[in-house]
Structures are given as structure tokens and as C-alpha cells.
Length: 549
View (cartoon, rainbow, N blue to C red):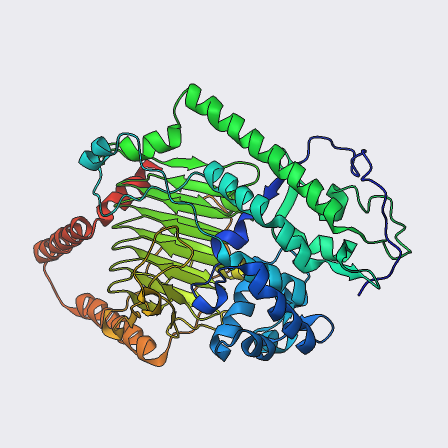
């Protein structure tokens, strides 16, 4: 129930922050990292199904927050899945000061989520991802690029339009779930408080040319002149709905005009380069804009290095890279690896989430709070991860291992993004559904009940430390001298044995009396075997790239 004093005046014209060029954008993070393939969370009619669930959750809430026990009860899901809901929501929340975001791992279940954020999170589980458009010259592309490794990823513009269209269709329902009836006037007089409006910021934000408005109430006119010392007067939900629909329609029109301009002019260079580049050419396609992630696309048969000054505070997408080694040694928020093959990808420290999709024969080395692996084949993941790794979709022959590298600024980066190196759940993966209910494809009856193939652990005898070359010798050196994630005993024992054997071999060589010509022969043999190893493993390419830089 809400107080009877309601602001019935029409929305004022002046923009509250005196910027008439503000454009509404979807928050991409919930749609990209916040969808869970749990059938009980996917509602065919969200407004019909969520209304009674909201009532039940409200009855179980304390101070408008619900913990994992209440979520498990209201949604009839397991305790593990209820915990997963909270952890996933925390990773995509728009408010960095929310108690759930700040909670320690042992506090997550009790701190819980704000009921309004949870309802919005559950609502968008009905979202269907955009199917990528096939290339207009797909036959030519197939001749150049292996069909099992090239994945067409929707462009950021197409994804933004798709997400806005989804919000356009559902915003009235979303507002109604956050609104309250006026006391004594029934459900036909729904109003929205300023606090509830701010929670819509979980799904949308306003900005222009790299500038983002920090809160939704500042970007809309409803509470622009509110007295900070007095409770803001709620506004009719219909006014908020009309305002947001108008802005969404305007944003969609702007996107349509941009796309039309590109189609009438030059074709999309990113798609064309990534799809048609000859596999023998190294295409270091790195692009970014003021709002979206930095996109690294189409890197082939080379090594690519990006450090903190290139990527600090950014989100990244690595797409369609093949036969390469990619180092992104920076503190990151989110990272996506999509459609890559026969590569090693080293991600510095991702403080929110990592997603790896549609990859083949890729080694991923990452320190992160959470990781989701979907539809991958014959990949190995060396993980320093604070939450249980998620494995979803159609996977085959996945392996996981403890984190196996370091670089001089690693500890600085993991501290900056909030990763705890004392917690590593690399071998506690959670396999969910083999079918993604959020894709736009139809699936046979009963397919949704099938579980994803779990990952196996790398044998300790096969575990090795991955050494990162010092690409920029002139840069300031950090304090990290070793892997900050403690190794399990079995892996540590193998590592110590290997180091002991190496030292014994060195000592034996030093103490063996050899004539000068035999020393030269031995040195030549070592160089020959090392060179053979460089070529056999593909590391010779890294050496050439290092010399070239």
C-alpha cells in the first residue's frame, strides 16, 4: 500500500539534468551474464506467474530482502539453485553499493536480494536471445573458414535493438510488478515511488556520447524537483510507462537510422573483415565505443597483448580468434570469449563474470569471481574462481584445472576487482541444462530435462605452469612473484617434483666434466630440441611476435 498523496500533474518538459540529447539504452549485462538455464525460472507468462510468487516472497521478506531459503521455497528450487540465483543477480546488479554486491561469500544466503531486483531478474529469464544473422556470402566464408569454428556473433547494435524491443513489449508488465495501488482505490490506481523507479535501472540507463546519468530519477522528469529532505511523491505508473515507451521508441528509431545508413553505404567492416580474412593473415581487430565492451575479433595465427592501460575498468569480448595466443592482463569487469578455436586466452582478473561460448580446443586461463562455460568442445580451463563454475549447453570433453600462471601486477588486479585468492572452487563445477531455454530455437519435447556433460579434472601429472612473457620490459614491475592461488596438494606435489628434477638435471650438467667440443655438442642438442618443441607447440610464433614488438 502507498500513501494517498499522488502527483497527478503531467510530466514537466525540462530535462532534469539539462541535457535534451539523453538516449535510453538497455543494460546489456543482465541479458548477457544474468540468464540461467533453469526451467523453473523460465515463465511462459511472466506477469501471470510472477504476481503470486512476488506475494509469497513479500510475505517471507525481511526489510524488503529475501534470502536463499525464501527463494528456494517460493520457486520450488534446490538450495544450490537458490544460491546460484543470488550469486548471479549480484554479478549483474546495477547498484555497486547494494548489500548483496558487498556481501562476503558466507553472508550471501542471509543478506539476500532486494525483492524488486529479484522480481526483475526473474522476469527477464523469459528473454530470448537474438539469433545471429548469417553472412550474406556464407558460401564464400565456408571456403575460407572452418565451419566448426566460425560463429557469427550478433553485432552490438543488433543486440541493443533486440533488447530494447523486448523491453518495449514488456515494460508495462515490469512497471506493474514494481508499482503499488493507492490506498483505498484498488489495483486500477497503480503508482510508482522514486525508489521503485530506481530499480528499473537494473534494465535500462540513460546516457549520451559516453556520459551516463548515475540514477534513473535524474534522467526522467518525475522526481526532478523533489525536496531531498521530504519523501518524494509517487507518480502514476501509467505516466512512467508512457515516458519510457516514448524514449524506447526514439532509441529504436535512432538505431534503425544508423543501420540504414550503414547498409546504404559501406558494409560493416567488422563483419566483413572477420568473416572473409584469409586464415594466413593475422587480423588484429580491436574495436570499442564509449559504452560497450572492447571487442577483439578475428585474430588469427599471431599473439596479441593488451595491458591495464589498454583495458582497465573495461569489459571485453574476444570473438572468432583462431590459432593464436591472446593476453589481456588487466583488471576487468566482464569478459566473453566466443567462437574461438585452437588458441590460448589469458584473462587478467575479471571481477564480475566470464562467459565462454562455442569454443573448440581452447585453453582459457582466468582469475574471476564466476565463470559460465556453454557449448564448448575439448577445452581446458585453468581457473582461480570464487564461485562454482557453471557448465551449460552442449559440451564435450571439457577439463578444468587450478590456476597456473601469474604476472607481476596480478595480485594488484585481483585485489582491485574484489577476487579472493584464498577461495578457489575450480573443481566444484555445477552442470545445468544441456538445452538453453533462452535461445530462439525450438527443441524436442523433453530435451530441456537433459543435463550438460560435466567437466573432468586435469590429471596432476599433466599440470604445468604457464609462463607469461615479459612483453614490455620498460614498464613498471608489480609485486607478484608467484601464483597467488594456492595449489591443491596433488598438483603442488607434481610441481615440486618437476622443479626438483629440473634442478637435479642442472646440477648434474654443471658437475659433469666435459671437453669444450662436447659442451658445444650438448648445447647444440639442447637448442635443437628446444627449437623442435617451439615448432611442435606453436610457441615459435609467440617468439617471433615478441621479437617483433
